[in-house]
Structure formats: structure tokens, C-alpha cells
Length: 79
Image 1 (cartoon, helix red, strand yellow):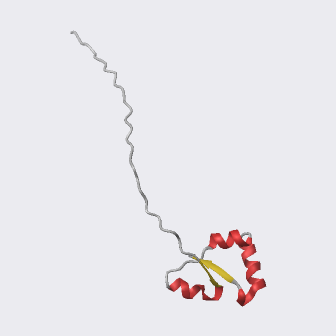
Image 2: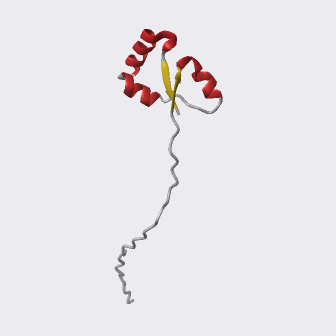
């Protein structure tokens, strides 16, 4: 009985595909409004810019302190 084993060595070849992707980015409209009006703006599709508020006032504790100091005069950033 004669049996022969054949081994094949296969190599993967690299194949690089370059794709061009274009993204249309529109500028974000931002406003500063009285915090008491944020709910009204929210119903119109605006969102509270929490990250900008945190950056401006030094985090969540800073925002709370700002609200406490300013009371009804506090302003908020929306986008």
C-alpha cells in the first residue's frame, strides 16, 4: 500500500483597499438662554449643552454653585 501525503503551503497576501469617505458636517448652532427657558427650547428640539456648562463652571458641582448664586438670572448653553 503506497500512500503519499501532499502538503500545500498557502500564503495570505495583503490587499490594501483605500476608500474615500466624505462627511457633511454642518456647524452646530448654539445659544445662551435663561435656564428657566430651557424646557421651552427643549420642546423645540434644542438640547442643554451639559459639556459646555461643565467646562464653563468647573464640573457638576460648579454648575450647582452657579445656579445657587445666580438664581433666576442663571443662563444656560443650548445647541
